[in-house]
Length: 54
Image 1 (cartoon, rainbow, N blue to C red):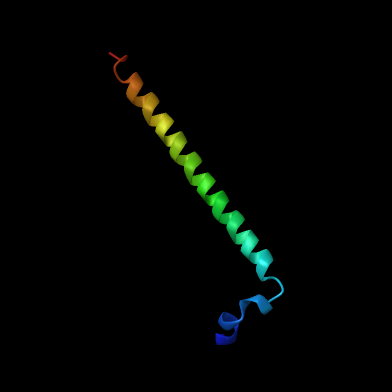
Image 2 (tube, helix red, strand yellow):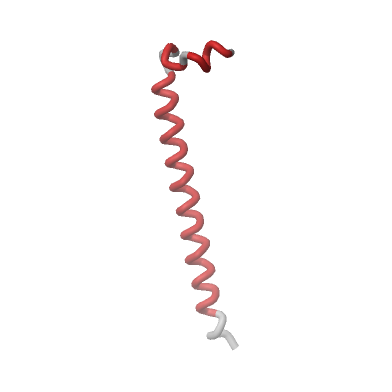
């Protein structure tokens, strides 16, 4: 295990795995940003419509 940490460029699939990890991280950030935006819009509509009800 110590040999893998010393020379990570020897593994043939490592650049591909790093690319997948970066893409997954970007996708997760996009998912979180979309969820926060949707929840914010929902909250804004709910707060905006509270004064109209009697």
